[in-house]
Structure formats: structure tokens, C-alpha cells
Length: 334
Image (tube, rainbow, N blue to C red; front, side):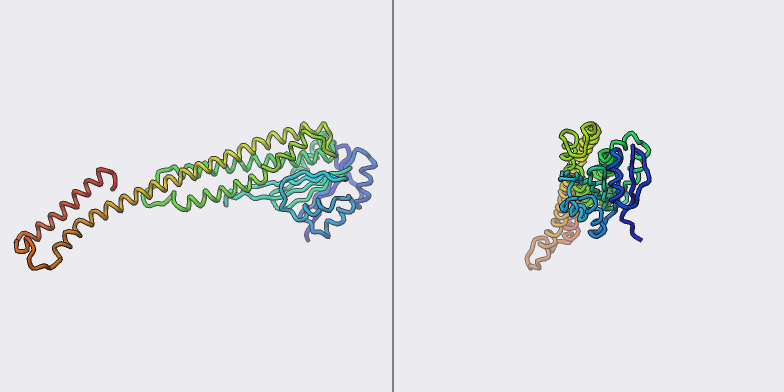
């Protein structure tokens, strides 16, 4: 049976407590206590499944539509009764060498936080367990959840950037490695791999680049439901995000350099092949020319009556071919 609400708990003073199953009663209890909040985690809910949460917490319809439809850019939106944040966590498949994107939405409001997850690249169970093990952070309320989730997402960015770096260094070594004649190791398949990595880096950039502006707002400007004392923590996440974006830029430049080097190698190889073809064509043209002349079947041609004419012509053709071969070999065409 499909479970939409993955976890639901009340946190009081930074510690998980039991509470009523009814969302309205649970939210009322949290607001009455003053030091408690409700955290609901949901996984790919439908419109009907999310309707109860929307009505209980008074979430804005536009934010709800974005949360249900997914495919959003990272952003931060402020509404009358809630704060809406979109994050794009990513994972990395080392077998297929692909970036696996996910999507994560957070609603923060008065004594509540709702997380909506899409895809498999954004597990929150580990974040919740880590927060529950550190009540000093969790007692700061919904802002602590946003910080911990953002920190986890950006740390995963660093891991993915490191894995991409390793794979690109292997690709770079392949491109610059000596290629055995006829092996085709740095041929069209290498170009396809380079363009494939280009697409993965672009997918990665779509997740990391747009997140810069929301993080700058969280760390430097007043935002509802985010206490001023929490800005320092978001500044730390923003610093990590800056490192990630610098790494992504470096990966993109490295890919461009690899592609340029590969295309240059292909051009050199093609020129080398054309020289070889031209050299062999020239060596084949000389005996063809001589044989063509003596195959015209005219009655009066020089040396037709000469007994040694046939072997002499063969020696002439062989000598001419040998001379051309030595010339082309000395110039590096063969």
C-alpha cells in the first residue's frame, strides 16, 4: 500500500514527542505550547492526498501547485502565512555516469514545517534522525529543519562534484593516452561520452546555480519564520554552495578543454590518414601510367621489338614505386 505521509511528529524543546493524530489538533497543541512545532514529511502526494494538509495549514494555492507538479527551479517564495522553498537534490549513478535529480519542497509557517519529496535523490530520514540526535539545533524550530535539509542537499552536491571529477579525470586520461593503430579508443565513442558528460554537468548546474539567490536571501535579509540568529548557519551553507558552483564551473571548463583536445586529435589523425592515402595513391599511379602507355596497342611504338623491354619496364615501375616509398617514408607520410 502506498504511503504518502512518510513521517509526522511533534517536536517540543528539540525532542520528539507523541501527539494527537489529527493534524488540526496537533497544530493547535504546538501553537499553544510556544516551543513546539509539527513536522510532516510527504512523498509524491496527489492533489487529493495533499488537500487536507493544504486546508489545515492554509498553504497558498500557487505554492501547492508547484509542490505537486514538481519540475521547479530552486527558489524561495514568501506568502502571507508560510514560506515556500524549492531545493533540487541530486545523486550520482557511477555505473551509467549520470546525475540523478530529485526535487524537494518545504513549507515553513507558524509552528509547522511540511516537506514534499519527489524522486529518489532526496531521502530525508537521515536528516530527521540527525536532527533528533541533536536537540540543541532542533529546538530552533522549522528554521532548523530548513537549515539541516539545505545543508544535506549542498553536501550531496559536493559528493556528486567529486565523483564527476574522478570520472572526468579518467576520460581525460583516455583522450590523451597513446592510441594503438586501429584500436579507435579515442574515436566517435569518446566524443559521445564527452557530450554525455556535458549534459550531466548541465543538469548539475540547473540544481546548483539557481540556489545561490535563495541562500543569499536567507543569510543576509529578513525572511519570515527565519530568526536572525539562524542567518549564520545559512551563511555556512551558502559558502559550501559557492564551492560547489566553482567546482561545476571547473568541470565545465575541463570538459571544454577535453573536447577541444579530442577534436584536435581527430583532425591530426584525419590529416595523417589523408597523407597515407595520397602516398599509396601516388605509388599506384606510376605503374598504372607506364602500363597504360604500353597497353595502347599502337603498331609503331618505341621498344616494342626489344627483347628485354618487358623486364625493363617492370624494373622501371618497381624502381619508381620504391623511390616514392622511400621519399614518403622519409617525410613521415607512411
